Length: 99
Length: 479
Image (tube, rainbow over all chains, first blue to last red; front, side):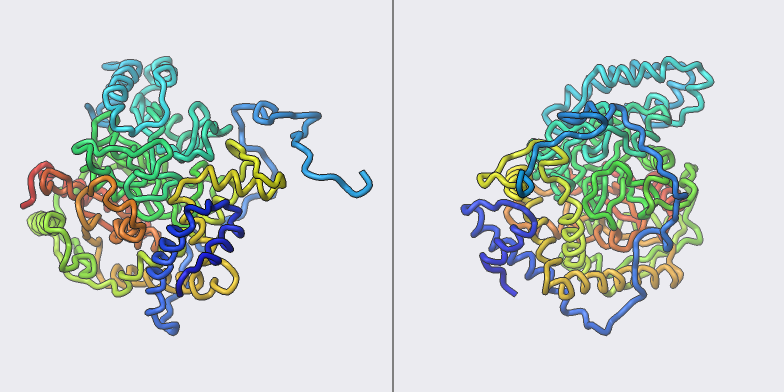
């Protein structure tokens, strides 16, 4: 199927990605070619099946249910812009009703 | 330039110091700065690492398999003493608070992390032209590309700056640049090497991989970084592949040549390289036979659904809140901040892949694309399983369809660039171990042959590659 300008804008919104107006025609063309290329897979009949393939170990190894930390070379306080009483302080994003 | 084994033995016995190796490595990095292969390094960090090795007593140094060996790391593998940017503006200045498992294992083995190397942004590319800090030049011809995405690591090994380096593979990003640059590139079985601390691109495909000047250089580094890691649930409980001598001959071994990998329009120099390798296999007592992997032509389209889909999910975390520089959008809300940061922080190829990945996963299209790709991936993996079950010990193919191409040749055509991985990405989809071995030159440019082994067959594959390396003069013109 062909890719339209609205399709690019729709997936850009889903992907949280600003797309400049000037880049749109090129993206429409390039995405159209990429999607057209991958559609070759439709030539594989749906009935042609192989055992399901999963990369990696057949069973996910389970660890003991113990919480331990990844050793950091710098304390969290040195990474955060603000660190108050063991918590990262971040800019306020909104206000509750009545505040 | 000396090998991994020679440097480690020299430092262990005290014949040379790690400090002298660090000094030489710094000089070589300065001399090759024009290649643009390195993003971060300082002489102070080199010297500090060397001092730790030189400060050990002789017994301590002898216990280190990589004592004083300089190894470069692709800049998508995290390190605590240098930045990790993935060649992206969105991670500019980022320094990890922890080391990747491979970084920690290299340091524990006495290696010196020589530098963090340039790459295609977030490892997405086949030419190392898609870096926010400019393209990497081929060490033998600056007008050409070194391959990618691990082009910086390949170029440093080919230029003789380091005897070995780490890259990462998702669809061929170590084997393809190894072939272009005339060095050895080994992609282990998925799960052989921990991915903890490798910035994720396509999680079911990614595998940290090794460049070496020789097969032995790569084998020694692979042995150190392999093995189970409780920080990566997909790492396998397999002992590291043992470092052994090259096989004396190939008697009793059968090599399959998949006919789909030797198309009629294959580059003449690449074809001549394969013919030369076949001749060497036969002279060493091995048997060669034609085999078929019938779903091969679907590998690249399958890959370009699976990899962008996984990338779109993995790269969602780079939003201006958790990592890197933040751009405030015009509307001033949190979503505007995400969109502005990501729109300005990611380069064109990464943006393209995120959009494709989001498209194939989006409502109404998931079954047509992503589910279909999973079906085809299973068929591709089954092709390999059948061939190996049918009495073939290894596969032999070209690594790339052509030798190194010119910079700018494919940047305007993403599909043409994707086809540079046509012989490599099927092995990432099938999770199998594979490697590129230099087998000659065509028009002065290196050509590589690819060996493929069954799951966890790295030790045997490296033994075969060692025999072929001895038998073939890779500096000779193949036609």
